[in-house]
Image (tube, rainbow, N blue to C red; front, side, top):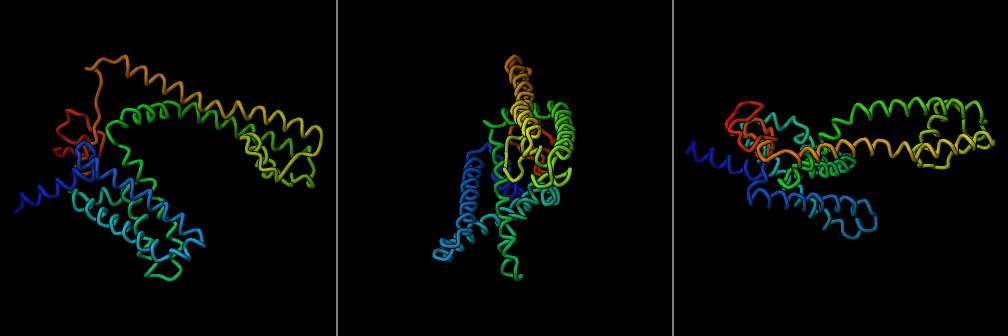
Length: 280
């Protein structure tokens, strides 16, 4: 009986947490479909005309989706040896926060506002995209972002300094009537202009101010391109490195998840979890 229970839990764990098996892939596909349906239902409910006419239908469909996510959440907890590792993990919290609002709306008055938290289900798609064909690309992008973080941090620091300086200059040049009533508000205008957003709620009126604004706008195009270029170069380096490496140098990563601590990212030839040492 004990072995049967272990086998039952192991099977559920394989289907829910992994995507290397046909059932695991189908489960992830169904999950993506239900997540997208849930988000569409939330959008439709926000349209008063649609909600007034189809409220019962939308509510019924939402309950079906919520019950599915509830069952899935419970199965995720009981299929691992250390459930608290999942419950208090990032995705565990996301799963809970995105599932509980509908229940709370019936228990506490005024909790309908929490229904908006259901959109957090969209974040779960990132976990589902662990499918084998996405792992290599995701790993390269992750490494590229990690390698670029120092350069991007320095770049953002320079942009902030530039925004403070130019915002202060605009505060001294422009009048309060033009909207530059304080240095923080002038810095806000500088950032909006530098990012080429241009809300138009504040605009320089003097010739000097308009000249400086023109320079900031031109700088904005270059500033937008810099972070993209940094990440692209690093991504290209990692892509070339992966192609140059021989078959023996490549460490294949699968979707195998530890049944004890739920840690992912194991090598193909791994027999034990690199985090807790449990047998895979």
